[in-house]
Image (cartoon, rainbow, N blue to C red; front, side, top):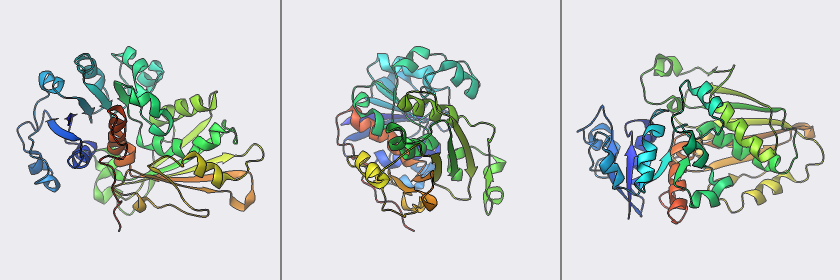
Length: 343
């Protein structure tokens, strides 16, 4: 059994890791940390885990963490980079659900996250944990940078087009919507039910910190710097991301449906839907799956790709476990064969 630790277990991605790992056939949960809730039983804070997880939250103890095989960081940005090195030196594999190792350009990371990066050498080592692109590298990795939720939905939607040079990658437009859980579990007026319910708004239009992550990764695929306009929106739902991706074709694109189906034919967690489909966020709620549909309105030169995920599963904790499965030579679907919730 793989001994697993979760550093920072009281946020939404932390409890999602607990929910998924509790029934993983190859994992034993050993440590769950929280400075503010040390000594509290996990099941007392999260009653859905009663009878599933009998751990108590504990102070982060490097010695206890070093006894594990893998440590998941479900912490605010800036925490993983302070603790990852000691764990790696102790032989523990690290999967960071935050942004500390996602962006290779350190000055850009520091600009968007407002702090100095303390371990730039680990950024160079870290493998970007999008299995649909980096599966082979993930298998041999010690340190995984789990992609953000918006970047996951966006990249999976654009990849077949950019890989085949079918669109003008200098003019990509992403109109993305997220459920309120994407803002985290901290108290904030903007995410109170009375504030977010029955309303929708765009935010961070001048610039969102996921934009440089998306841009960097798509530029690597394109072989040159892409031009990206990314506008996120807050929607009155708890879970889910819906990304509407616009691009302009540059020539004969052929059969796009076949292109997408063949690109993702062997991907266990990408579902290319039938022509004319409009995927819904509720169809992925609780599941580690991305559903995609391709449209070419009026047969014109604009392509519209629709991509939906659960921001807490394929956009965070589920993808982290998918990476862990690859790192330890397990079935990639282990612990993730979850039918999404309906209604």
